[in-house]
Length: 126
Image (cartoon, rainbow, N blue to C red; front, side, top):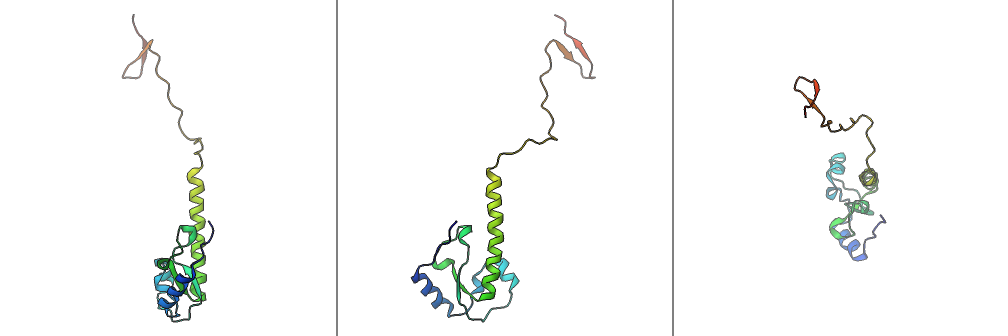
């Protein structure tokens, strides 16, 4: 999936909202857990909160200004999720292979014979 660039109006509004500081608090829980302290560094990079490869749009709600350190960590995390997502998509559409351990289906019993409950077989009388 191609990366969606933010429109200039969204960039302006996101910068105004951030006040020029890192908005790591807007990121997903797994990123916030790695950086529990609030970040007071100057934000220079605009990033998608939900990556384009994970169907995130170029909207103000999906935009966050980050410092360099948080942006690199977020990008690394997004790449892992997108790789996993791609593998899932590929495997979902792939046909299932025959399982060699799968038992062979049984055939119907010959109607000429009768099988008793004790396991013995005898010919039916006509």
